Length: 248
Image (cartoon, rainbow, N blue to C red):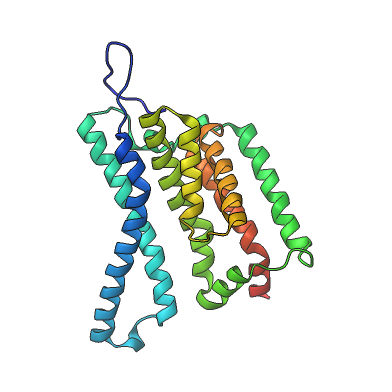
């Protein structure tokens, strides 16, 4: 839980975000994604009119870049909101501490190594039992369409952005404002599943449970870096069979 530089006589430390603000963070993030996509798309259309289409990426690749850039901008926007709230409350807690980006000395290596091995086994199964576990068509389509930038987006950009937003900002904001770890965890993990905009029941349940593992990376693993690492490793395992087909 977050620490603050002031508290009442009964030891209660006011949260950085109110309950209303905490609940609204997810909607702010999604809204910013759509807003920045529209803004970047408008800029792209204007640039294409000035420079000519031959000097800019083709439509589908440009669209992919717009989505990735919008996620980065939206993540930075939420980080800026945390910074502003820190200044308003005059808390001494650093941004790094609030996000949970603690260093090596804070990491629960037993937890980190255990889940790393579990995910590596998953990667092995995905590559060696490919006849029973077919290549993910979406991953292969993205690789064929966008090349290595899609791999970078899935294995580097998405884990960093999503973990900062959901386990670094949304979870502690809900936890501090509601004082209810279970509620904060479920809202964070279900929100993580919903933001991928795939609404099949099986997919939502699977992503929510996966979000729970990533959340444990922060709470039990001792650092958001553990969550980011596990998220990246999982996405790598999903992408790996398609990547092997792509490079061969």
